[in-house]
Image (cartoon, rainbow, N blue to C red; front, side, top):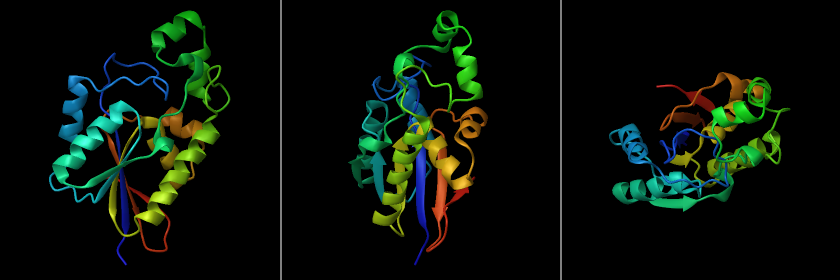
Length: 195
């Protein structure tokens, strides 16, 4: 049996620039964001199916790519970004100006310094990991692309590398349209593949 491969691409730049977008802010990709996504797609990627977050910054590109590659796409609600509660839609500058050192505390220890009303980081990581495991089972032996968010990549990386969530949030920078590749040998544990 061949390895299962699951690649995860972060969406490109959304309209409105950099700000905290969880699952309740659904800005579409900007013109630059679309360009970033198309530029990130390798020649002959070999993907057999695409699974996407339902947020428009992911889903619209996923559907366009699936049409281009003549493959199916499915929408998975549990791949949506983590909820940022009271920080949804706000810039870092706004948070720093209006909430003192709250952002600095969050960046140092995001598990214990969540914004008011934010989704618990552990719950988010579990819902994302469940999708990853279900994908591994359903598409065993295939090469799959997930179109998702920086938080999704961090959550999966933390599970694969057995890293604490606060470390993966504070020490892992994920640029727009970055691709994290994982390979799962038959009856083996997932590994992160850097190319």
